[in-house]
Image 1 (spheres, helix red, strand yellow):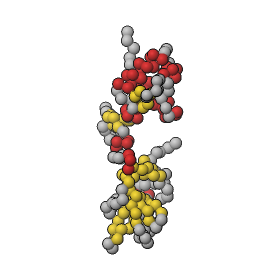
Image 2 (cartoon, one colour):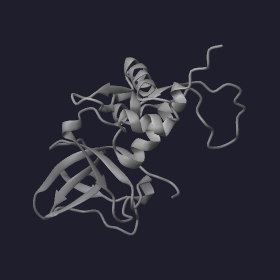
Image 3 (cartoon, rainbow, N blue to C red):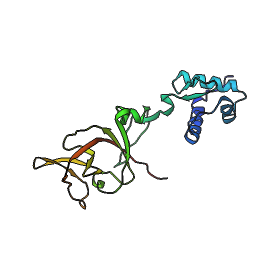
Length: 197
């Protein structure tokens, strides 16, 4: 009788190992980790995972590196209600990659930590990570990281009395009218926030 395929369970174990150690273990370590009898069983597993794009063989012998699908998460087809609960009988999921969702061009994208509370009314909090597409200009109404009077800040770019200004989203802070040059570093395209520990 053939045993059921446990490749997804083994893949999850390899992902957990990678999260702790930042590399995929060698074949013997994989065998020890997953309870295989031999390196050959590890190789067969890695070969199957490679076939589906989860890992790829490194130029070095006995070495593997993550493929794109190694970091694949699952995006549910059904949205969760933030108000009145709804009944969910069968939630489907599709592959999801945060980078594909947030980053159009990695070469021109920066992740910048947020410090302070000047944008809390826009839902941007101290400790959040801002995903910024670097560009030197922006339209009024966009949230931008800009250098103004020698300092960088994240604010809404607005136009008032024919000139650009930076608007905080916290009534405790005043509108910023640059004394000198206002230089746009980039436009906000996303916010990353982790809840809990």
